[in-house]
Image 1 (spheres, one colour):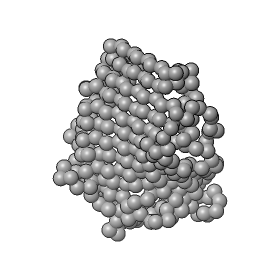
Image 2 (cartoon, helix red, strand yellow):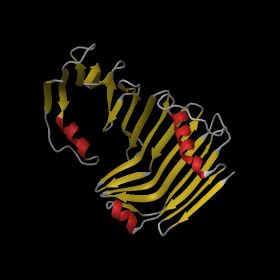
Image 3 (spheres, rainbow, N blue to C red):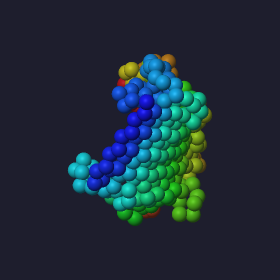
Image 4 (tube, rainbow, N blue to C red):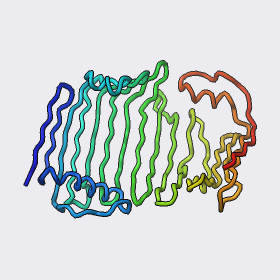
Length: 273
């Protein structure tokens, strides 16, 4: 058996191909999700040789403006995807790209989302050539990562006009059933400044709040430290800010502008839970 569906409207052209009946499509998506995220859903029985292919093209239209008034496709968005459940590796592929779109005051060039699943790992990447907002420009912004065994790891980076690292970060999120665990896994780069991150930092989201373990950032005598009073139970979260340059912090709001204020900040804060 096989199925072929085509859709053509003034703003959307799409085609779907399968080698099974369309009535089985919900079960196919459920099975595919189980392979990407095992343990959260029970695996259903579908044909092991089933494959699905889709391609689509979306252009700007008043219908899009009705639902997303701030969004505008300046050039078409193309989407391609394929899954083949008979393959152990490379069983899923997805790609969405547009040369240019805008959302409110932001305009993005050469935008691309891609993902693929190989064995038990799903890798993804989101990147663009440039993002413009007024006088600010984000050069080569990118986010890349992977998801495997309930662990999401990702990194993000923005370059300056000389191709040097301007902003960057790396983090991981573990998604077990009873809690969420967040960690910074790389040092941070903020406005060209490198902030050293403690290796054993951890933020655990539990039922009634958060437990923070040794989340500390240090840069040239400046530091921000965040930790729970009790690491074994829900307790106040203590924040210590030492010798932070206020001008550098305010410069985060505008990438190309100089600091709008000056001063050094010291503070001790306790957040009750």
